Length: 145
Length: 145
DNA sequence: CAGTATCCTTAGGGATACTG
DNA sequence: CAGTATCCCTAAGGATACTG
Image 1 (spheres, helix red, strand yellow):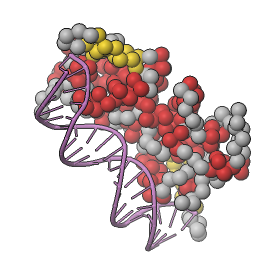
Image 2 (cartoon, rainbow over the protein chains, first blue to last red; image 1 turned 120 degrees about the vertical axis):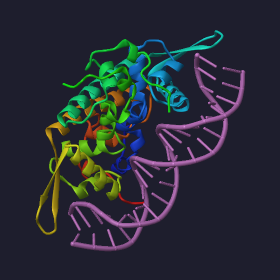
Image 3 (cartoon, each protein chain N blue to C red; image 1 turned 90 degrees about the horizontal axis):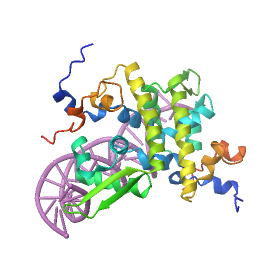
Image 4 (cartoon, helix red, strand yellow; image 1 turned 180 degrees about the vertical axis):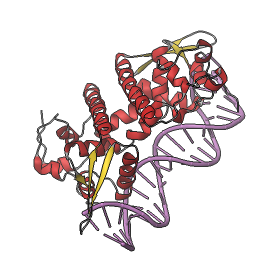
């Protein structure tokens, strides 16, 4: 379907149109793996819950949620109540991504073990590498400092 | 094995010690997927070949290769000749990473198709989504401009 | 509650010149 | 050939205050 490209066309490499780059900007920044994982565990999670579970600023959280929504990995549902309630959930694509992220986490975990690097215990609890403690997982991060 | 942590310990979330972060900094930046893939295809690839296949500056390429080596994903072999010859190859861990990157690429490719986004044809050739043309793949990137 | 709006800092990457 | 060494720039993220 119109795929008659010359070698010269190919040489004009557009990195931003490569699937690697798409993947990186879609879910491989500092916070998106954590955000997606939080949604996968806590269905219908609300805005404030993120900020209690992750040391992320509201600005950055908001930006990331908007991007994830635009990329169709999550759905934002607004309930017209007072005070407002907004819930976030995964799309089918978002669930696929979570499966891949799971693989990445597992690889990273084993690799860090192999290299004897310290591993954050909270993530381990969330991913089944450590006995869970509800009291901690419900609100792990203190806004202190 | 000394894993007696209090809830307060857990609350002190160290994002840099989480496997997600480890994965991101190990092989999820702008160029590492391309570099690793280039090595996986062209065993014993040399420094200059990267710069001909990717629009990457020598500085950034060098930095990335050093990091990949430090993280034990690639091996750097120096042959004491004149002029010097240095070859890069994958470690077993590097090959594992390439397998995961393959999954990410495939997901990204399908997702971009689904969303009707333009996909760079050169990457498609390298990943088997498009009929390969040797002449282009051997030196796709022109240093012009 | 669920966010914006501002302002600020830093790390990652790009361009270019140079070297053993 | 296989890199350093410089200098520069932008995008991502952080801190904080404010709002419907």
